[in-house]
Length: 140
Image (tube, rainbow, N blue to C red; front, side):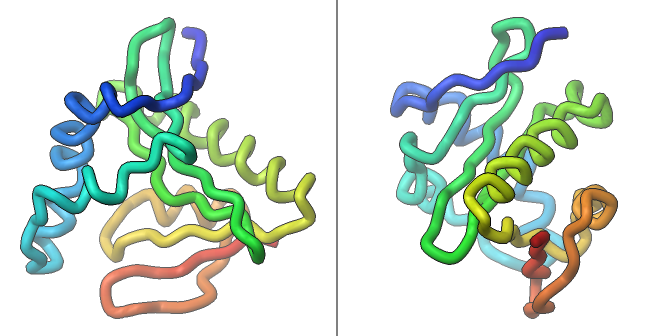
């Protein structure tokens, strides 16, 4: 299986929006949050969003932002059929390498209850702040 990335475009919103909702809505329900249908479209930025592909098929999204003080891993979402195959791990390791080259820490937020937190811990991230509904994590 060949994993690649391509730049996101506004045309990707048609499949990304329901894809993102299918993954994130269960966490919102667990946290007793109201799902806001407009939030994803309003925050979608093709300049920092990549579409993850497996053998040319769109299977997810990755948002990485270079900020003044860090590299910020905003989102990594994979279709359920492609999870637990090392794809997310490799994408995160690549983001970590970018942060190292930029001499910046890499940060992310993970919602409480999200099993991805275990992956982040295995990859060397540590909790730097616990908020009401999520953890802010960092790797230097």
